Image (cartoon, rainbow, N blue to C red; front, top):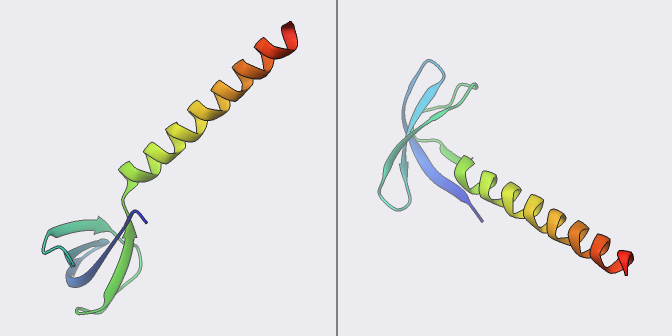
Length: 72
């Protein structure tokens, strides 16, 4: 699953700074207040975008095949 699990290190405004389970430091937009030390799960938007593009591509391919097969 394309999620990032981590522990909140700091929150400044609506940004949280997270230490991920892979040992990376990342910051995310997070509108709600979180306690320092709380575990959060965030989606990576790049992965969501790639899923969306793959889905649209498969839909276009299926529509093209349907049109081609129904035309003959």
